[in-house]
Length: 122
Image 1 (tube, rainbow, N blue to C red):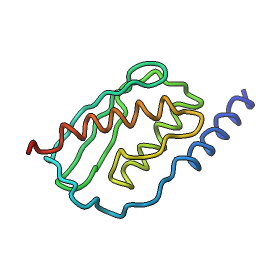
Image 2 (image 1 turned 180 degrees about the vertical axis):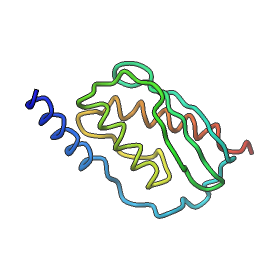
Image 3 (image 1 turned 90 degrees about the vertical axis):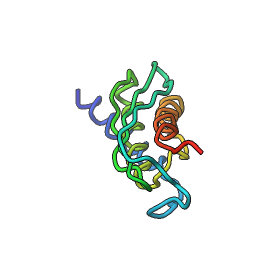
């Protein structure tokens, strides 16, 4: 049991250290959203990843993972880390987490799907 907990903590630490990207600042120039909540879906390693985001006119305010079947030792820490980084960067244009590439891609695809719905139609 202790080995499993230690392994999970090590993987979480590795995921958090690998998920960072260069900061874009508080707001992304030109980012424009219709305020509200939007859901998006992407394909992870173990199946669909479904997220709900909340945005105002310029920022992603909240990201919640609603459904997934990702691995609790590699996928889940990657989803948590990417959600935090996406909020900080105000973007889904992030690097994937090493060791959880497919889970990362699915999460980022789901966030981008939701953001596409939040963008005004030209």
